[in-house]
Image (cartoon, rainbow, N blue to C red; front, side, top):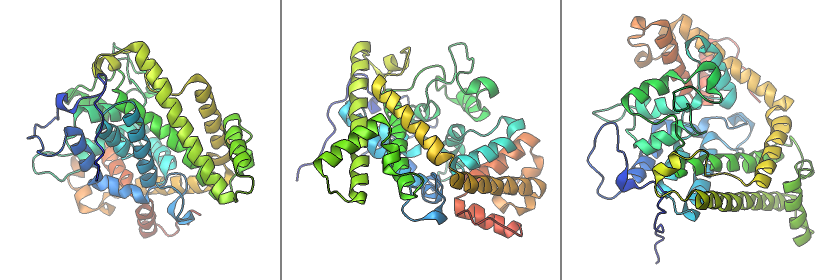
Length: 402
């Protein structure tokens, strides 16, 4: 039986043999590259297992067929590997970044994140990318000589810079960090291991971020259709979906609705992947980077959509925002979910004895900021159903979230 082997890496790919290493030195694995080892550590982590009961858009009570944070993560990993393979990148690093990119999400998706951000407003707020770094460098505690997973520099860099550089060369925050500054978790870790917050990440991290966009576009459409939040003809009012649906109906005029939707999602993913491969290849050819560091030092990202498909991507995201994420039914459930997180935070803050013993240990010696962060760490690690069970234990009335 033939065994698939990754083709030779491009000169601009991250080379596992030249990794900048781990914060805590370890002997190399006999049978795995450093990046493959990162993948395995992420998959075996507690935070990764919890993703199966964390909200993507719909909470677990709403049905078995909707994406969870775990199934979304696996879909992102599959797309990231496909992009990495086509561009001769390191597939293991792209997969590791995809597998870990959502480990910092609290229960109930962005609703839970907003609630924690409110409660931590006086202490730097809550940022799920920073929380992901916190999970993989401190909160996972399995190894005898260090906290965290001790991932490679390249994986940590890609997780922190999931959306690009955080600062300029002078250290001034960029984009969404201009208002509140760089999260303290990231700043503190950067003192231990410089992640070059001012540069772009390697190409593998960039394609993992685009893979996240592709998965959101395709699978949130699928879930929205399944939930009857909108109809296929509604999304087909947009130019790109309209062409795909028209092509399918021309080829299969009597195709049943379920198969039509599946074929639409399949073709949409394929088209977006092909566009990213072509556009990223064009940008790389123009830049002609001789190393992964040359990609990091570029003035702009090398991975992304072409201009026409980028506009189509924005149209799809705008559609999903108005027809799905801000749909009255979804907003009602998410508002109730956010109230669960707020209630839990307030209760633990007022009465730390309600926290499990290992989480309240030493809490009395913490200042207000450290105390709030410890409580947020505990809540952020909860699954949806554990958060609801805790709320039911502590309060007389708990919303059903459906």
